[in-house]
Image (cartoon, rainbow, N blue to C red):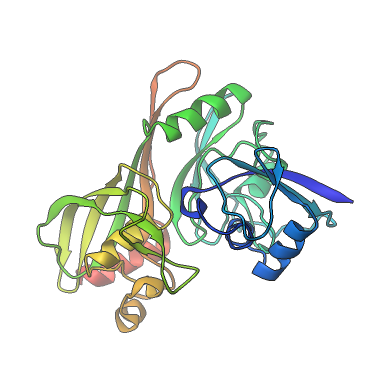
Length: 304
């Protein structure tokens, strides 16, 4: 028995070998991804792929071996829903929660947590990611909008693609940026030597980040960040490229001693504000999220 899934190819994976790209998209090992491909289980554009083929922009149809349903861990305290109507819900995602399930991920998901809270999502999209129109990294907290109706799913997916959704992040960066506000326009692609990371590279995808310093402390700066594009790890990569990695972001070169002093076990990054046109009425929906306890505590230590 197999489980057919339709997976959009992320920007960062376009051009990758099929086996490497499928592994990145799903969390499978590269050898396991290659086995699925060699069994004829990956199709794009009506063509069965070989493991050495390059992935194009578009959709993959993947035939995964069927697995027994797993008992998903619960989210302690549940997920806060800050806005909800018949079409959409805006949630405050905690750190440590994935947007949706994927092979290899054993932790809680937004989809599973909302189902447990009796929030019904749209039927559009792959089975494990119904209603998900955008994502936050597992290690990033803050606002996500999910679709509850098929109309909302279609309209919001298009809005994110056309960049009409306003996404505002707050981040605590090491050091003091000079200038204190500005725009980083630098292409991002797969890191040349670390498969799990991204970097500013000459042949990367166009990536634009706008930042403004809100506060400055002895060892860091609180930034407000507006994304013009939405590349994987974009804020983390751009800040690291400026030699001001996010506090606690050891993957991208943050100081472990400062992270320990601030009590951080993840990067200080929060999806603070989200604004979009309501998919049914066109009225603006704008929601703001407070800092979670770990980031708030670290910020107070930085100020002190």
